[in-house]
Image 1 (cartoon, rainbow, N blue to C red):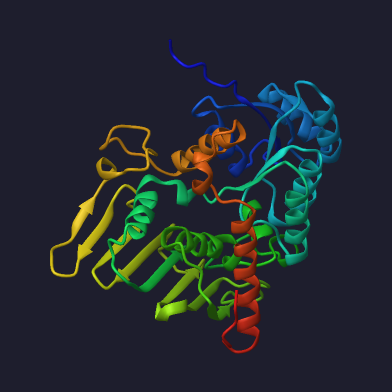
Image 2: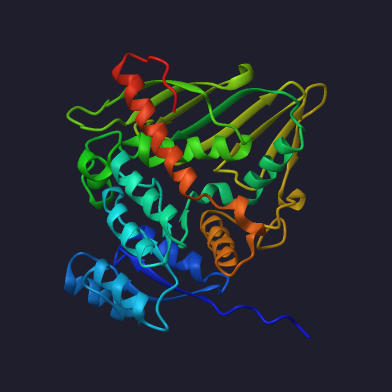
Length: 367
């Protein structure tokens, strides 16, 4: 007999109403493997829009996330997890409300807009039985997971150099639209490029190497006149044991669309991965030619289609959702794959350390 598969995790959503990009991404990812069923949501701060969005999706609609947390926790068929897909400054309140109600939280990155908000989330996550998961989707791509396995296996020898970049050009001018407005507002974003894409580069390097720098030195710039948040950040990294590194993130790099990359150099070999070629991992031995590894060599089991059939952005999110569902249902073998509260706090510490370093003219600061 085939084993009986656990019933889908009942999912709710905060934010992500009609027209919201990231909310739609999370909904597609959650249903891709049939391991979640979206049943409720507080999809907008505007009551009429919230209900209209819920009606469009055929789910229970709420005007307010606090009322939703209370009501869903009391229902025998209430949600078991909730996806929080709001702007950064609106992560903490719903995350805390649902964690306190015993409902698992799947939070978009970064964890929060401020250190105090992050602490509130961490306190709630540590106080009860509900878990917090952070959707750093790029770390769920098969070849990123393969890169992590190669580093852990010692394929690079002694790690010497770590270089991560995330380059975009879409904010090279004073852009005004829904996506740009909150990202360039310090009250809603907390940080600019540093929080929006810098946390991705930080987590990617941390995830693949298994190491966190001991010290960082940051130079932050706001290159567009009048912009109140950083739009370019250059960060030097120092690791224990002599390993050096760097992170460069920018949203004013004209011509760059979504240039996330990671390069690692060891005593025996080098690894190189680029998001715009996500299914390839370049490994270069010290005394041999470069090898292009593809998903045919992926050992993580994260691939969804046969090699040569392209996978990408949505599949990374779906891998995380599938792993999260497995963890919720008790399969803890998926634990190490999914960023959680510690990864969220690390990202917030990275932002704070970069800002403190930049304020002191690039002084070395511990993250």
